Image 1 (cartoon, rainbow, N blue to C red):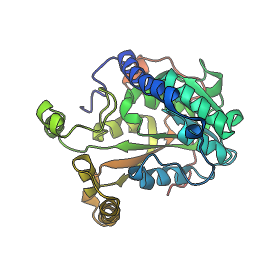
Image 2: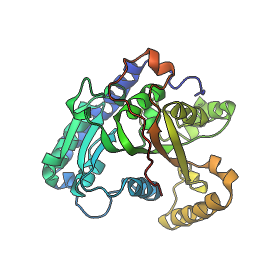
Image 3: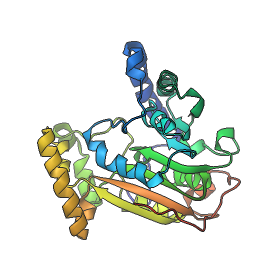
Image 4: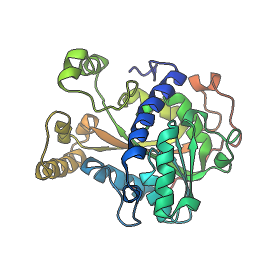
Length: 305
């Protein structure tokens, strides 16, 4: 995906593809899960798998303290993180393009005892604004998303996010990265290579982020910071790794990424922190969406870890 084009399909088509995929997933969950399967405890962060531990912990640490904050989770899916955040004392709004998967989230919140602290709304981030949704009015103290930006129309989404942050607030996203020349990206996603080593994707339109995507973010935010995770751990894409091997690779990656700056652009994942929205930012999105009321430019940036 080039820097000048953040999507290869129309936004509505992309939303339809996403919704179809996750609605099917939700149908299976709703038909097979027991009440206990929906339960999220208020204890440790509920990681989807070992790959998420480092970067999701870092993302949550950036928006702490959680109690009393109004938090938006973009692409909230089945509500695992949103429910956990509510357990920590946050008031949480979760949005997603899949109505089915949001039903899973609502059941999860109800079974976990945080129904009153969570609201789940069926809408993509590209359409979530204060004009159309009461839940968006007043903005948010923090915005978080895990493996979601690579599904978005980047420019439209950044416009919305910039308008939704309260002064001094930040948005943090955990995202797959692929900082390589376009020709290599084309080879990676070519049919022969993809058949042998399928990309870890759920829907046909998603693509890992690259430098062009960071450039788009900088059109909308004065503060754009990315922290790399997982380098040799990319082997997980090609072979099954034991927990012991995985832990060793992650430990090695932490040291290497910290000691060798040039290795950062070989990372598999990154946490992207956005802050200080640019009032009246211009870009392709400006011609495609109406201006959002209450777009503010912050003068204070929270300390990030």
